[in-house]
Image (cartoon, rainbow, N blue to C red; front, side, top):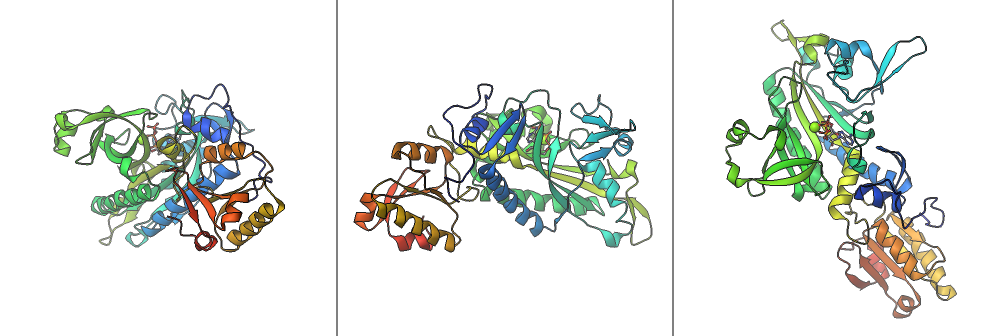
Length: 417
Ligand code: ATP
Ligand code: MG
């Protein structure tokens, strides 16, 4: 992509009402636009990052038998009433609205009930199970406070997978597989080292506990008790003797940390399937409730998390796995040959399917470097009078700040680290 054609502009100042570092940097670098508190739009660079995160999550969901779907955001009141979750006293963050004929509808904050209802049309026998549908979808939650940028949106992107199993044993096996898969996802997103499986509240679903994946960051809204050594953590909400005993760990081994919940997995059992009548016929001919689980990942929250974890005083630092582009090609105004060479190099990179943003703008070097630092693309390649003379290219790694002279062949091979 040519930077001169990119409609988004970088800016020195973030909006005054933006308090979160993640949103501040993403707005300044032109990745997102703030519509109102807790509501953000994704611009070309930001949407590319979101798509990269989605691709990784999608690959891993497919690898454990997930089948991608897309459910409606508008939800029927009756379905939620059957599970007692339409009531504002029970669920306090509903966005509700009305059809012209006064029928009430809700904007989905999650999809357990809708999913279970839908499956009634497709599951009748043990042969129809297990089943693992999932989606990437905008969720709506009327959050009381939204001061943490992408960490707490009133409209946000979530990946939600739902498991439908014959027995609790089958659910338990899938649940363990999901934990492993989530670890793989966070490793691929480069936050594996700072993300911990955390014992958390079972919420309203009649189970004692759920598991969260918590990433350490001072910007996080959650408090967890962590043993880095044993890779075990307990959310403050459920920190007590019973939880410690369950994990076979003593309080002395744990330190208090700030973290952000990037994923949450639940065993739901028959909490939704029983009231909604989602049953199947066993091999022996008995009718039984389908056993459910739900597995969320905060896709947009992850983008904010990656920014918080890696950013430095100059701006965003993207890991290669989710960077909007791999290379930021920057030419510095010099004689005509420089621009012509940079243009050709850009064409060659594109021809090899190497993702490159080309800063072809006629601006001062300092300004270009400042923008490049702010945007956080992993490798900056500089073409100037000087590099042209030396016959090599200057490459600066965003993360380490390390500068190397490389050949054109090395750059075009795409192997830079
Ligand atoms: P939290 O405790 O942070 O309010 P939650 O437990 O209500 O989150 P879930 O219903 O488990 O969240 O949703 C699955 C995932 O969606 C969460 O693990 C989180 O990563 C993400 N998520 C939840 N609420 C928001 C939000 N308001 N903005 C952005 N992401 C969110
Ligand atoms: Mg949660």
